[in-house]
Length: 119
Image 1 (cartoon, rainbow, N blue to C red):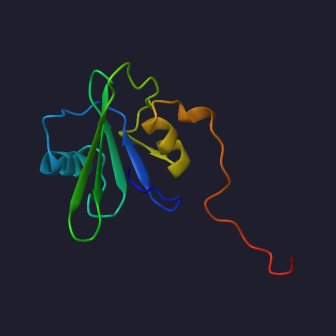
Image 2 (image 1 turned 180 degrees about the vertical axis):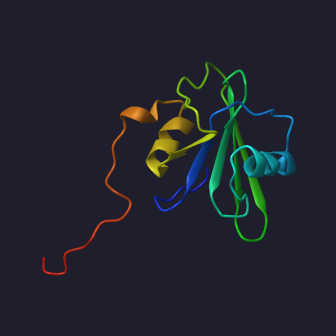
Image 3 (image 1 turned 135 degrees about the vertical axis):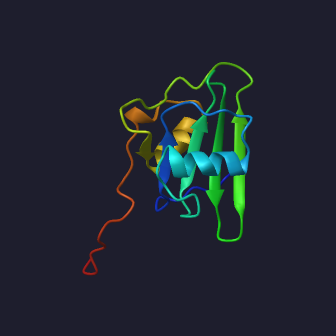
């Protein structure tokens, strides 16, 4: 399981990706379609056309990681739509998505909040 922290930037590609692509092909999609730097440390999430699999591309400072999850039954029911090529998600929303849930109804505390030193 990948460790996802609240501070991570997570971008979900709205359009399905060709899952024959590996790291280099998905990095190219990040640059061209999503207009983002694949070396930025962000997590880039892609779904295949049938909605049965997800790939996550991440760069850790030394190299790329490519994670894939394919459901044995059913499909990922939720997927963002819109005019933009990518949609941002928060860490807790990605966790729900990876468990084939709908992250739109989830809530979590803000990833950063001021701590009151007085009490």
